[in-house]
Amino acid sequence: NGDVDMDSCVFTNNMCTNANRAVIHSYRHELRIRQSSFLGNSPVAVSSLYNDNQMLIEADSNYWGHSSGPFHAELNSFGQGDTITGDSVDFSPWLDEDPLEAAEEPPIPEDYALFRAFPNPFNSSVTLEYAVAHEQDIKITIYDLLGREVESLSPGKLQAGVHQTIWTAESFASGIYLARLTSEDNRHTRMTTKLLLVK
Image 1 (cartoon, one colour):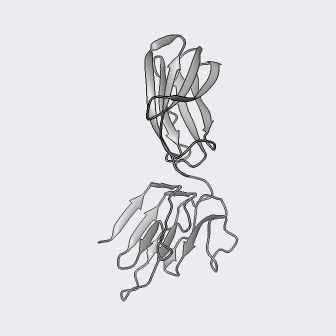
Image 2 (cartoon, helix red, strand yellow; image 1 turned 45 degrees about the vertical axis):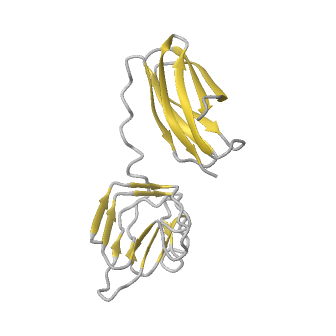
């Protein structure tokens, strides 16, 4: 219900179920989206319809999930990024690389820390990012909401630094799971994050 500016935002793995709309859609107002990342949105990332005032979506200088830019049937038919429809979306120029991918790495904790899970929600696999301050044995355990252990991931003895472990959950049912990070060197400290599996 008004003009909107969106800068340095992340739009990832969103699903639009209305064929006449998109993840971002404008009809009566003007949107300005810049330095943002569009990654894996389906079926359409951005769309717009002209109204009486001929307003546009200004969506230039964004990353569309691929260096070739977003797919547009006429204006960029070779684009391999997220799809754009409508003649009133100004999406050029686009960025060749994700502007938010080069964000600073999280600081190393005093002992160890579980930072984030991405993508989250996820469809078949999720990446868990964590860090250890010194060499130690790390274990990641996945639980369901009833507290039952459903998977054990053991990266083993890791050097100090930031690390990632992927949980592949193709054989598991949709729902909420908990990932718990523990260390053999410090069993009293446990760090947990919530995961949402959607199929």
